[in-house]
Length: 154
Image (tube, rainbow, N blue to C red; front, side, top):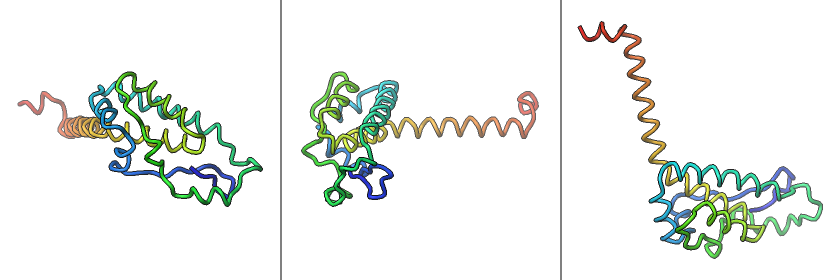
């Protein structure tokens, strides 16, 4: 995370799925992958709320910000040393506790990594849901174009 010189906010480096996976203990990844869709969606929402809470802590208009120091962190992802440990119980509590325990410099990166990892695990569910909705809409559109169902059955 770093503060931008234009005083418009803080920034974090995004990572692809391989980089995200490297920031999690294998047991934590397994727990995420075994969670139900409903649990994952709740966890995703919780991480989004935590990210908003973390952002409130940073003040981009703080006069004490050393922009030369901030430039050292530009484009640097969450260090692996701050990755997520083994969490197999309550995922929301575990991920939240870990993020809140990170140094302030890395909290935004930590919560962003958690949010993105949960989204990555949820992606196949969302893809199937979009396909189901698309198929439903297409079937509905065909029915409307061809008239009533009874007319089609004849």
